[in-house]
Length: 226
Image (tube, rainbow, N blue to C red):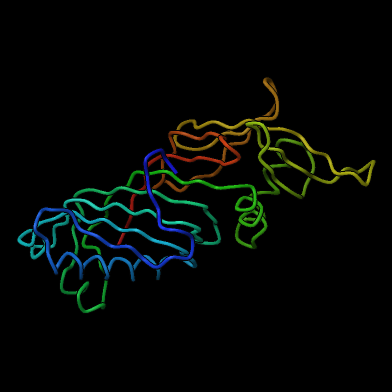
């Protein structure tokens, strides 16, 4: 998590707060509705902190000035994240639907910016899932010339990729570097070697990808649709 941020302990219940702009009980109700919506979108959220910004008058019109979400141990579409920190602004909602808990919470798409952190276990479990296994196999096939992907680990600022070794029982393990480029993440095993560009949803733009303190950091923007 970025420096200065504070999350509840893993496994804690949701922490929901508004700012000092006078949203009052309506803001709290909307935050609860947002929490329920988020949990419906994700397979798992261990701990969650939501901060909303808006006045009662604007909320009655379905206008939320801003929102910040911090979560730990999140699973979304079989992708696992150790921590998530997102910020969105100018969010248009359907207050009646939110308070009834029925229908779409969002009136229009909106953009969020934030950071995602993954550790080695997150990477292995994500790329080992049925939904993403082919991506991992394509990655090592492109960079190492063999597949399937056996294991990923983060070591000394590099991503260590393991794949079967035809001439030995001991797997091949090759270090790879990564960087953000043109909205996605590019991996490469050597300076002049082949590269692999991760396929990216057009609604997502990654502008920072780094390995630090045993974690993969991804930073960028995404379009959230109703």
